[in-house]
Length: 417
Image 1 (spheres, rainbow, N blue to C red):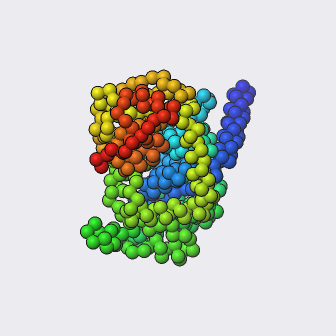
Image 2: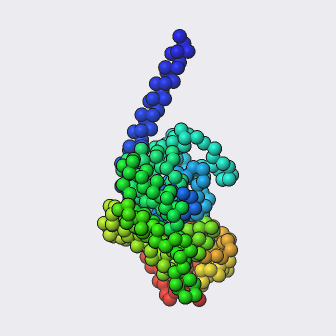
Image 3: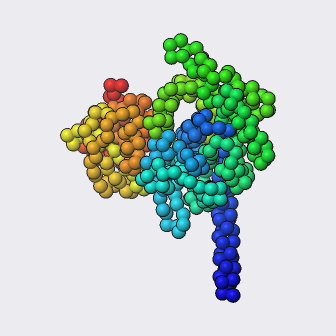
């Protein structure tokens, strides 16, 4: 009798836990306006790269974005973005914060939960995978979001099915390549969405030709316009035909996709057009217009209030005239408009995009420099770091004091780039 009573008690506790989890999932999803599942019929079509860059591009427009990697066996998102940090445990029992990649972009992936050894295989069956995906929603303290981008493994298995059942208002973007072997599997993804009543935002044809670096002519390495023909035949929107861009692939391999900023390339122009389409057919277009005004008003408010960390490139104790030529960086912490602490740090080797990421990891909010190239300034803005250029050669403390008192006088941006 005792064993039976104990069994009933455990069953009751499990039922109660499930109800609590379902309630937490509902509460989290209420605070997320748009949920987009990025899926594909087969692997190797660039789905994760598109998920990562789409999240970054939406965040750059001032939108609040979450990126959830539910590819539990082959997570790619942390490596594509170069995420080295882990989740934080806030003062809420059983809860975790996602990794903050940009000030308005949060990321969760099984890889950031696995500790230093990220090459361990996740050998899980369906029920365990379903439970983890639910925990990614219920047990992660997501901020209120404009968009949650969900990177799913290829196919129509447990992960996309769980997303469809748990997030019943999610919409799908399906990624393919032009050749028939990929399109055949994409047709299965389209049928999957229709069976589970998930709206399809559109189709993305990736690796759609290669632009010759010498003459600019498009070379059709695979089949031509296969995605376009499929979209027309199935009556769904073709969001983009993205050409192969070697530089984009190189950024992904280096874990630097988050700083991709090459706006003039054909790939970038087509990708930006895709983002604009997504904003138009979801509720994001108007938010972008509002966001610009909101961000400007917040910037002035944050100038003197709260905690702020400044970085100043120095040589011989004073501001180095050019940002990339400095021996050390002075990091100056302030609270309520007053300097509380100054430390010096030796920078890593100077490579494009490396210093912004390094300073962001040190918690820097503002960089004060004498000269800095426009491309480098763009990298810092992508990480949410304010840049002040044209500052005079003074001690870092003097520069920060003048910034806080709104008396810093800047001159010409002295830069040899």
